[in-house]
View 1 (cartoon, rainbow, N blue to C red):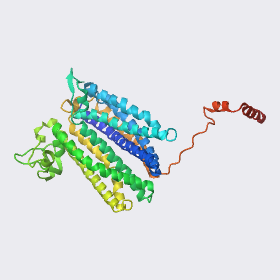
View 2: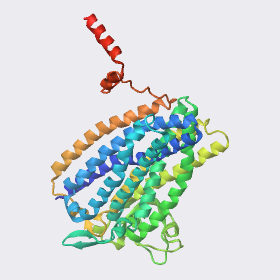
View 3: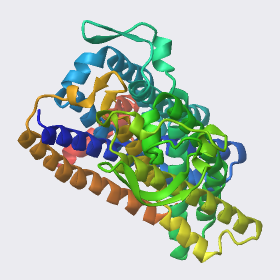
View 4: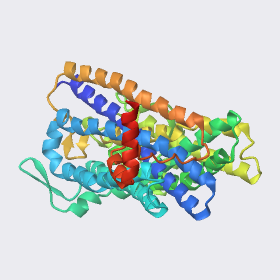
Length: 476
């Protein structure tokens, strides 16, 4: 395979995973949000929580469906585009994905129907339990997916026998060194993205003049969640960075744009700049002296591995890793600022009145999803040139397709994805634009004309049935 075909295979997978990841992220957050709303409804009987539940469950169902469809395509790509990887590491990644299906997918599928259609057909306790099980299923699903991906980042618990990976310790495989940090980071990112999504929806209605009690409650809950989760995410991200420094030093050096250590000097924090791969330096760099050492080594002159300590062929493409990380961190800081602003406005009694706050919340609506994508670009591009870190190179994992085949299929993916998922996203936005409405239960269908009609007729008195028949013949 030539370099163009390899690059196209990587772009194709990056495109499909970028589309896919936004839907599970919102699914994880909305499922938990729906469980909270239904729990508050059962506890307080406040109709606002019931109305919000029925408003958001429609958006959840559309988003859930798009997540399932987009995920199927990625599963097929392991066989079509990355067959050598599947042959080499399938004994680990295959069972982990199978566990996800056997636990999370079956759990979600088993209770999803009750959650979506059982509000008036089952008792409130069973329905609430179903909502909790769907929310739990989304978290279990993310656990298995992150276990598989984290193993590719920090492989453990395996041996290589006859050119294939063989698991020897499943606990070490699952709970590999980066797994706890990456799972926590991803779940919190999903909660943040959902809070911003919900908050932007409420802000849009505020700016349109809709300040109903349900919209106010929606905005209040979203901003409260943002204030709770955003600072925690910053702390988790810091710990994740220290874990990356220990287990993936080349990725961390690329994140920092750190090319070389100078004897006796601390490492500066490169705030902005353009990493030049050929000249091995940062152009137009804006640096803060010693701050890189303080953040990563907790000392004034501490040093860590630089990019020049790795062979050029073992370095990731630094510009993407460097800038995607800064996009993620920058958006995270804006999330914290929005949370502080909103809750300052709450304290002053201006949470529902400040149009500037509402405009800011609306603009920040997609920020959580953009930050997730930036984080994934940092993670996956920073792992290169390895598909399994320090074990298997990406160039050795890809199927032997030509550039033409990959280019054509990539173009088809782009067209189909933008058409299908674009239509789904537009439909979700239309549902959001309608806003929450007072819930009115739909009447149950009558027995007339249903498959149960012969049974219902059999229960009627014989004289009534004979009267109907005689009347019918008389009409003829």
